[in-house]
Length: 144
Image (cartoon, rainbow, N blue to C red; front, side, top):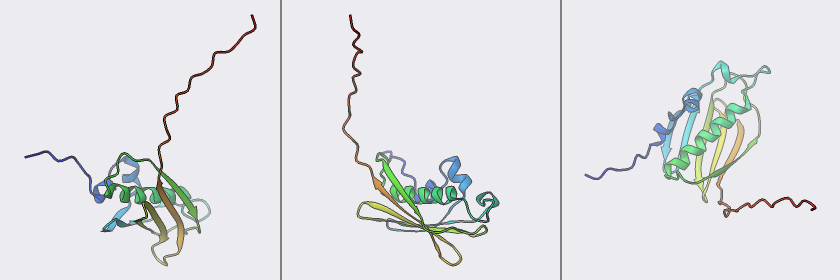
């Protein structure tokens, strides 16, 4: 019997790490390279103005995009996440994330679960590693 490398499933990746456990997003569906997550509302997510904090929305977008990336078993690549806030979710709203892969990019839509209002849209693109640059600091030249 040959030992297989550990490859977590999308459901297991949602429980990896303290922040992901604290966030508490639930995996609703996995279909090919697309997933759906549900984030139930908690009082910690609200701000003083009656909206869900943008950091929570950004965290959900990152978790959803990273879960799609892990479905493809890309553990060694670096990605850039570009997030655009379109609206605001009222406190008490559950958030729904839909992430899918298209043209080597992961796209994420965050909506409220009740009326499906679009809150944020994110794109996660692989970062091309730059050539290694060797930095040799020059010696200061002092007058003799």
